[in-house]
Amino acid sequence: MELRPLRTEADYQEALRAIELLFDAAPETPECDRLEILSTLVEAYEKVHVPIDIPDPIEAIQYYMETRGWSYRDLEVCLGSQAKVSEVLSRQRSLSLEMIRKLNQALGIPAEILIQPYESIQTSA
Image 1 (cartoon, helix red, strand yellow):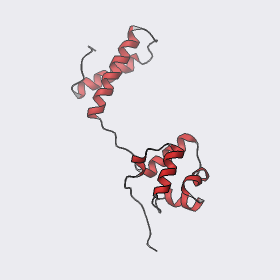
Image 2 (cartoon, rainbow, N blue to C red):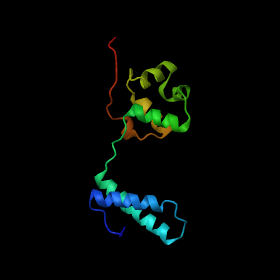
Image 3 (cartoon, rainbow, N blue to C red):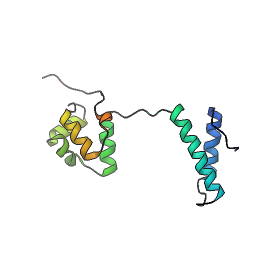
Image 4 (cartoon, rainbow, N blue to C red):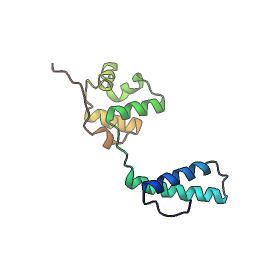
């Protein structure tokens, strides 16, 4: 593939195929340089043409728990009792501002993810 800006989906797909062929290039070789340039072009194309939606707060909490090996019990420090943890993760209780602050601090989940509205199954008392 000739190195040039990626302007179309076909250019993008061609660059992805070229990257796949160069993926195991040895460091400090012309192939590795080409891989780095193609990766930069693909990244720039994806920023404009392939937007990534941010996850809903509960999905984000579950992802962060899984990647850090946290259990429901570990979340108690952020959400309160074991019952509250269960209610939040099953979408029966909404996150409070204090919970959002603690989750942001303890797990590093960006506040912009935690404060967005999400579907919950709150029952009326």
